[in-house]
Image (cartoon, rainbow, N blue to C red; front, side, top):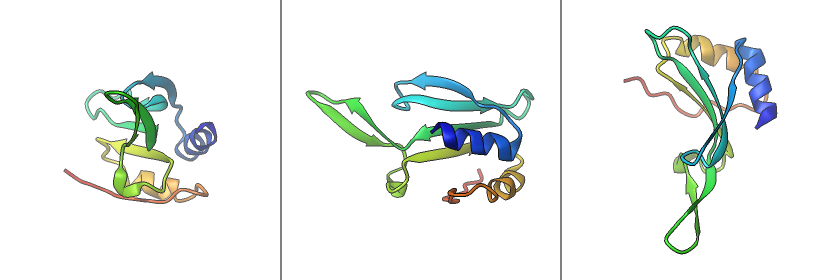
Length: 102
């Protein structure tokens, strides 16, 4: 996860903050725009993690349709989708999975 973080930081010229959350299954990385008007954010999370079920741990996938991927980069609330995608295309080992515009 750290190697991916460094490659994305280099490509985009930004710096993620290390975070921890039960929701994301532990460690994850977050970057938020300082411009509060756009609220742009990028997160690097594990796609698969364990959570506590009724009697035993249960494997959870954040995005089951992309089950073969261990890590995900989410770009949210961005007006720079095309720019970010172009910059990330230079990072070896990244696959573009999906884009949803709301």
